[in-house]
Length: 324
Image (tube, rainbow, N blue to C red):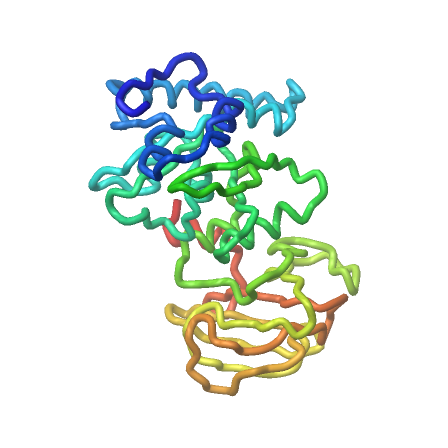
C-alpha cells in the first residue's frame, strides 16, 4: 500500500480502519506504512495533508454542532481518521498542533506523550482527524492516570472504545470526542518538574470553589482530593526539602516540601508520615501513607502546589508561566 495509496472522500473511515486491524500483521514496518494514511509534508502540495485538513475542519464543525444535531460520541467517532507523520527538524508539538488545526492534547494523548518533548528523531506521530482525548485502557504515566481518573470513573462519560495498532501491537483507547485537557491536566503535562504523589487514585474534588463536604461552607478548595485505599504510599511530587511536618484540624497529619523557585507541595490527611523534618527528598521518595485524618470523609490525599506560600490555580499558573 505504501507509495500507491490514494486518499479520497472522507479518508480512511473508522470502520475500514478497524477492519484493517483484523488482518494479521506481517511486519511492523508494513503495519506502520499501511494502516494509516501517510503525510509526507505539512503543506498543500501533499495530497494526504490536504485531505487531513479537510477531515479536521469537517469534524470540528460536527463537534461544534453536536448538541444541536444530537450526535452521540459513537456517531462522531465513526468519522475518525488516524494519519501518520514523521516530524521534521525544527518542528515541535505546539507548532504541529497549530499547523494541523488540532489541539495539542489530542496529539499528546494519542501518542502517549507525558510532556511536550517529541519522541526521538525519526519516530512517527499519529494525527487524529477529530479533536479529543485518547485515554489508554492501561494507563502508565501520571498524566494518563489523571485522565482516566477524571473521566472514566463517571457513568456516561462520553467515551468510545477503539483499538489502535502500531509497531506490531494493538492498544485499546477510550476516545472522548471534543474533550481537551483541563487546567490541572495542562499544568502536569507542561510542568514536567512535578509528578503525581500516588500510583493509583480517583480524582474526587478538583481545585476551585466548592461546598465543603464536611462543613457545608462554600469556599476555595486549594488543591486536589485524590481518593486511594487506606495506607497507600504517598510520594514526593518533586525533589526538595521537608520543611514542615504536623497535625492540623483541617489537613490532619500533613507534610510540606519546599522546591525550587519558591514552590512547595502539601500532602494532607495522612495516616502516617514516612519522612523526617529537613530531609532532602527526590521526586518519587516515599513520604507518607494515605489516611483520613483531620477534616475528611474517607481515605484520600489532599494535594496542593503552592507558590510563595499561596495555593495556586493550575490554569492561571499555566498562563503566568507563559505556557500554551
